[in-house]
Image (tube, rainbow, N blue to C red):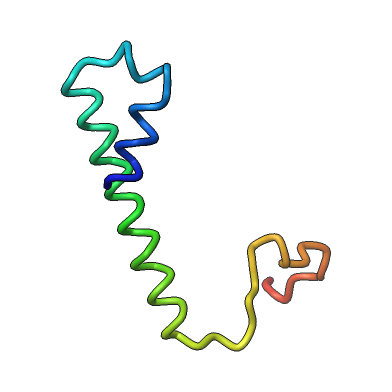
Length: 66
Protein backbone atom coordinates (compact mmCIF):
# COMPACT_ATOMS: atom_id res chain seq x y z
CA UNK A 1 0.00 0.00 0.00
CA UNK A 2 2.96 2.30 0.62
CA UNK A 3 4.02 1.98 -3.02
CA UNK A 4 0.51 2.83 -4.22
CA UNK A 5 0.46 5.80 -1.85
CA UNK A 6 3.76 7.07 -3.22
CA UNK A 7 2.59 6.56 -6.81
CA UNK A 8 -0.64 8.46 -6.19
CA UNK A 9 1.14 11.24 -4.33
CA UNK A 10 3.58 11.70 -7.20
CA UNK A 11 0.82 11.78 -9.83
CA UNK A 12 -0.30 15.31 -10.75
CA UNK A 13 -3.74 14.13 -11.86
CA UNK A 14 -4.70 12.99 -8.35
CA UNK A 15 -4.34 16.47 -6.83
CA UNK A 16 -7.79 17.42 -8.12
CA UNK A 17 -9.47 14.47 -6.37
CA UNK A 18 -11.37 14.82 -3.12
CA UNK A 19 -10.11 12.99 -0.05
CA UNK A 20 -12.73 10.26 -0.41
CA UNK A 21 -11.96 9.75 -4.11
CA UNK A 22 -8.23 9.61 -3.43
CA UNK A 23 -8.73 7.09 -0.63
CA UNK A 24 -11.02 4.99 -2.84
CA UNK A 25 -8.35 4.97 -5.54
CA UNK A 26 -5.71 3.93 -3.02
CA UNK A 27 -7.90 1.10 -1.73
CA UNK A 28 -8.66 -0.02 -5.27
CA UNK A 29 -4.93 -0.23 -6.01
CA UNK A 30 -4.42 -2.32 -2.87
CA UNK A 31 -7.31 -4.68 -3.66
CA UNK A 32 -6.03 -5.17 -7.22
CA UNK A 33 -2.50 -5.83 -5.94
CA UNK A 34 -3.74 -8.44 -3.45
CA UNK A 35 -5.92 -10.17 -6.05
CA UNK A 36 -3.02 -10.31 -8.50
CA UNK A 37 -0.73 -11.80 -5.86
CA UNK A 38 -3.37 -14.36 -4.91
CA UNK A 39 -3.86 -15.37 -8.55
CA UNK A 40 -0.12 -15.65 -9.14
CA UNK A 41 0.22 -17.90 -6.09
CA UNK A 42 -2.64 -20.13 -7.25
CA UNK A 43 -1.18 -20.41 -10.72
CA UNK A 44 2.20 -21.33 -9.31
CA UNK A 45 0.72 -24.08 -7.11
CA UNK A 46 -1.47 -25.38 -9.95
CA UNK A 47 1.69 -26.61 -11.70
CA UNK A 48 0.16 -26.27 -15.14
CA UNK A 49 2.05 -28.04 -17.89
CA UNK A 50 1.92 -25.23 -20.42
CA UNK A 51 2.01 -21.48 -20.05
CA UNK A 52 -0.81 -20.83 -22.50
CA UNK A 53 -2.36 -17.43 -23.07
CA UNK A 54 -5.57 -16.49 -24.88
CA UNK A 55 -3.41 -15.14 -27.70
CA UNK A 56 -2.08 -18.68 -28.29
CA UNK A 57 -5.49 -20.01 -29.34
CA UNK A 58 -5.68 -20.87 -33.02
CA UNK A 59 -9.10 -19.63 -34.08
CA UNK A 60 -8.53 -20.78 -37.65
CA UNK A 61 -8.83 -24.44 -36.70
CA UNK A 62 -12.11 -26.06 -37.78
CA UNK A 63 -14.60 -26.50 -35.02
CA UNK A 64 -15.88 -29.97 -34.19
CA UNK A 65 -19.14 -28.59 -32.81
CA UNK A 66 -22.26 -29.11 -34.90
